[in-house]
Amino acid sequence: MNDLQKNDPRMYEAIQQEVDRQNEGLELIASENFVSRAVLQALGSPLTNKYAEGLPGKRYYGGCQHVDTAEDLARERAKELFGCEWVNVQPHSGASANAAVFLTLMKPGDTFLGLDLSHGGHLTHGSPVNFSGILYESAHYGVERDGPLAGRIDMNKVRDLARKQKPRMISIGASAYSRDFDYAAFRDIADEVGAFLWMDMAHTAGLIAAGLLNDPMPHCHIVSTTTHKTLRGPRGGMLLIGKDYENPFGKKAPASGRVKRMSELFDSAVFPGTQGGPLMHVIAAKGVSFREALQPDFVEYGKQIIANAKAMAKAFLDRGYDLVSGGTDNHLVLIDLRSKGLTGNEAEAALQTADITVNKNMVPFDETSPFVTSGMRIGTPAMTTRGFGEAEFEWVVELMDRILSDMGNGDVRRHVKEEVRALCSRFPLYDFAVA
Ligand code: DSN
Image (cartoon, rainbow, N blue to C red; front, top):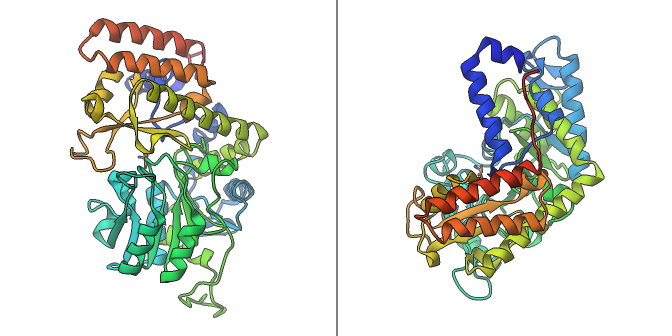
């Protein structure tokens, strides 16, 4: 980063300090990860300079022959990774990908079902402050408060809600749900009420690619994702269809008059429907990360993410913490801090003093606001990338518990911070020292 340091020292310093923060702290935010140097190099490449509206071979600009190659590589690799017939790698983010889903399948005012945000859902699944809740009617299913399905979705209740609401679309997917989804059961419900089925697999895409969680592809009409969470690519989004199909709206291609495939409608919804020029440097970086995810060691990585999350869950349970749903099947645990007399806000701030980064999170049936919350979400993907195994995660829980059990104690926080620094130094991450 020599040129950056020379030309813009203030920006260089901000970046270097963030690199130091990533190197020296425990990154436990469930939606974050660390990309490889190869991914960073593609992101920092001159492909950022190129406009390429359209798709490979059908662009609105000249000079696209090389970015066409990059996008085709990314598309082919994504298709292989997820065993799907069609993919669009252009969405700038998960929210952009989801906007294209709504534009294709819904009309303003139509009703859809989604997982309640406070039960682990996502903003773009019908929150009243998001376009999905402003332009469309949303009805939400949630998790159970008690009983054998406590913290989990009761599919009978989803079916009852679908029968009552008669939605045009049902969404699946979550940002704070530690269990897997029954896609076949969701599809059965969608078929019964004549709804489209959409899975937003942003959090779990890497685990699905590795074959470690149920596969939404055979069951859903459309799948969206981000590329930067468990999938460990650059920040971005993507749309996928397991098996392409004729669109039920009867929309025709202008020149030939033939009925368009569903994939063509989704392509149009990305561009020109919701986006302009794709970010070709990000698309190249997506392609690099998909190639990495196709290697056999990515499956081992995914297995370790889950093993680490299970070890972490057990260590918290052993120390008397309440976990929503009592454990985990994936990469995260959601801790209900009410029994410890703490808010998520307090826990997040206290842990940050020792360079342990988590995020406060609503828990199901939370009585507090999203700025306070009663929960804490913790994920294993990032530190697993650094090489942590179960023993390291058990130690991390011990360190976190020392702080959370003695909230006012500055000596404990200082001591834990030293331990965090020592632990991180054993698992090096990035070295961008100026040459
Ligand atoms: N903001 C992401 C998360 O943290 O889960 C979801 O978009």
